[in-house]
Image (cartoon, rainbow, N blue to C red; front, side, top):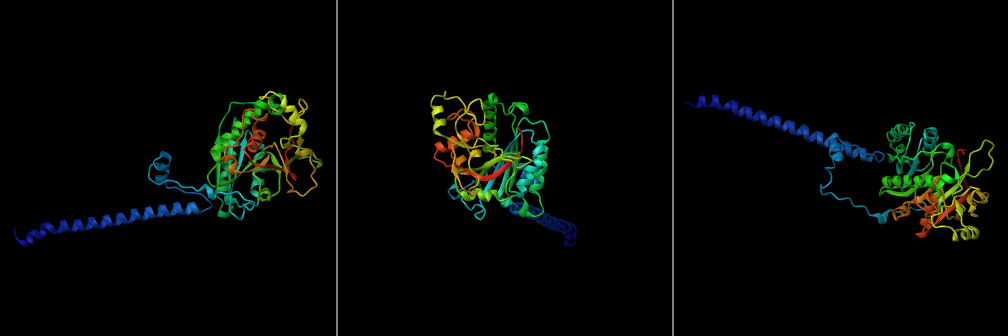
Length: 364
């Protein structure tokens, strides 16, 4: 075979090989570019208002749990997590927790008031536990969360919003929810819902936890900064009922101090007996915050032994160290008042602000 014949046979092969190498190089460049773009979009999403965007591939890995065991541990130094009197300037995160049941009529005002607050929105997370609900509460929450998390200006986006649903199969007509004989069992279920919500939503970045009722209808825009400035473990404002004539009607009677009379009554009670405030069926003799003077400076604090949860600000370490909402009788209390008793037994301080007024909707 001649040299020219060899060239006729082998030259096309070398040309195809060169073309294949070029095509592979182009494809490799495209793949690497796409991967780089994907990583860039993830990082940009993480910086924008605290949200994280994932590619569909990463989403599949995340949902399948394949990220576990990759050799990348999480390290969080909780020694650096502080709740101080100047949380706003120190960039301390606040978690707002609200348990809900058929809350549709109240949600518009609830979100309006939260959005009016002057605390930086990128430091605020909100979490809900929806229980035994038959109205459109969940859908409204989803729609509002989409608005709060996807605003054009990153400064107006909230850090995180979570919606949990847990049914307890507990049904009580609205007109019976405040009956004396039904309170222990009702509030036991409320305690369980709060504990579910707390354990599901509390994250390592949260320095403060705010328990907020959905039907609180008025409070100052700077209330978070005000309550933080008091710098105590647990603090509550004075919650009154909203009235058309502006008259003084106390609402949250779960904020109280023990008295010699109330302590004497408890000495002879069965350990499982639950005391309730604001009911003529059993007068406890306690000093309610709604009965205290309200003309003093609004940040003037008084020690309390029991609290409600219409607007209760808690340093997150109080919950982290084990103070929760007992669904059983703890020192003759359940739920929020039991939480206050438990926190005090652990050495935490519980305080109220009689002159700092907020308003709850006028209901039964």
